[in-house]
Length: 318
Image: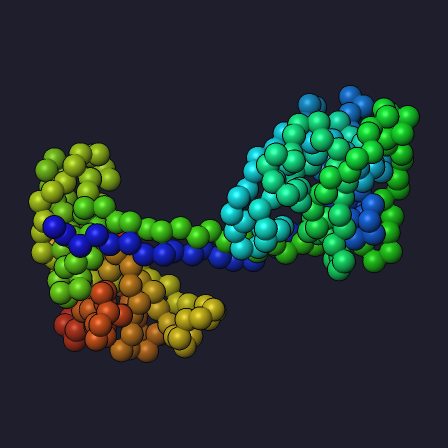
């Protein structure tokens, strides 16, 4: 039985965007314990507010203030909260139509259990103690016994959207955690790399050798099972000089990242070039892999000392 490989993979980055007048007013209002919506051209009040009418695509800016109490329109129970979710104890995800609004806002409801949640339940905003101008200024919703008496008590009132020190930009952390499991082709490839062997797969139709192997030819779309040894030496086809240091990467800048056509391969892979000043890396440079003890893949590629490859030998791989 081949080794069953898995690896945790995290994609994480901060996403920063500028806020227009509508979103700026909405988030600044939350900081001030005010919930704002926007009135569409058909008279509906949208909360959270949109910048463009969903029916006509025209810009809309007529801000209105709605209530901080509302009605649950639908819900789902979350028995195991994940990191950075609104609550650390089990809670309900709810869509809440705030009094005066015609659309629903997604947030968390702090309830003792799923039996305490139902469509039509009345809830109210629980404000965060520290508010900064973000959707998290609403800590969550909580049950509220007061019934909704109709538009006369929950109507939307005009608001000019003016606040002191308005929020003009938003930075939100984006993060995706998942477990990667390679298939047959990549499992074999990674196993060979651990033995310091470079392999590809040959397409039975076009006969091209692809590295790393993908289990199928990306051009012909047919399964590929014939394993082919390639390299370990190769040729730099194109490259770039990296001048911005990546977080948690122990490599000094500038350094070079290149596409490398391994001998016998019909697809260039990418790798870091070292062992040569960055400004002497060039197209056609002949390189070979360098492993560090315990690594399952080459740490970098270094010059072999051979003459540069002729352009015609690798131009089809650019």
